[in-house]
Length: 114
Image: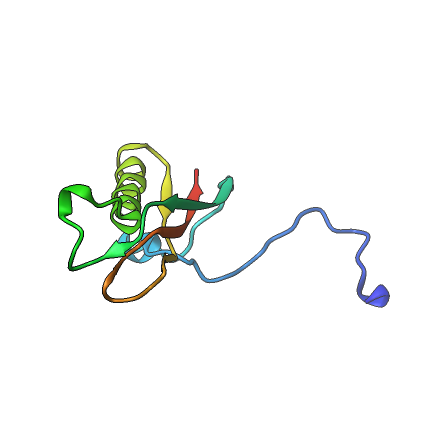
């Protein structure tokens, strides 16, 4: 590595394949990066109350996953209405995770960049 070091470089170019569809959609062969996005990664935890799916009436439920679903939609809506913001919920998990149990806890990730 020491033998490959350059002392006379005036600039730096990094070439790589675009990770998004913009150049292809605009039929452009190359793009020039002039800025970089700042990224934030978060983990959100929603707490509800577990209960049997067949015996707890809908009006009495405190379903953590249903609440998390509304939050996921809010993340998407916020990104859609905010210029230069992109956001993704890439992972979500519900506990206890049984088919007949109202989720008492939901955990999801948020990746936001602008």
